[in-house]
Length: 284
Image (cartoon, rainbow, N blue to C red; front, side):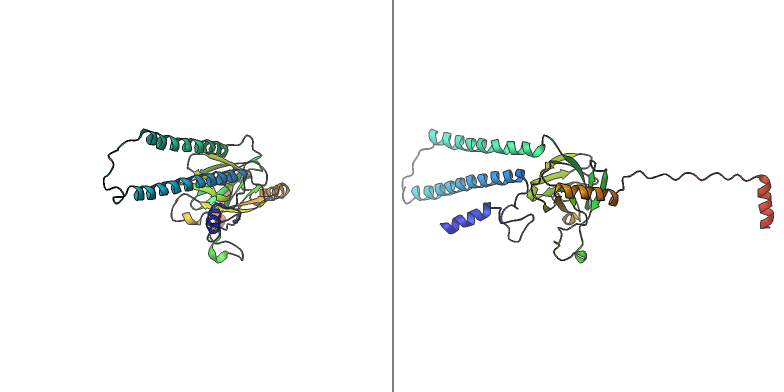
């Protein structure tokens, strides 16, 4: 019995896993946000309810097969209806669904918006890379490409490492606006409970508040062409002071939104008719 319970809690436990997928992982990653913690909690409750219902139905199948077998009932019963049983097997599932729907709808509402935001970032999906914009910190932007296998360094994760990760501060409500520049994409970070479609011509919105600094990983979760499997999402969460220092430095490194000075037109050179004739004579 203890071994069965141990296997069951492995399925519903998330403390074993970190900020990225691991080998032989059976459950969610360790939640990085309160919202993802609520998602995991609701999942665990629904998993227990589903398991109990499955065991109950399995018990009924074995009981009916044994109790009403041909050997035990050579003369079968002619009863076709039982009002009480029919009301129960209709009403009980409805009650279960309503009880589960209340926290589900509440969680969906929490995922949509927060009451206030400390900053905004914009995510644009392209084939096959991500573009990140920071309108509140100098209006700079940069592109994030996957590191190829031959360029990986020791400790880098294949297919989950990029050259420029999205950087956000810890313990701040960050509004994330998501769109696409070509085809459908989906920006997803499982440990944060984020998975929002990037649709061309449409601006979708989500938000996040990460408690602990660190590096969190995800991938594009919408088939977007031949390079779909090579669009990792990497989010680097820094303490507020370190983030502000990074933002100030990034303004210079990625200052591609700054106004470009337009070169002044060269002064017009007026050549008199006599000078033109003199130049022609010299050429002769």
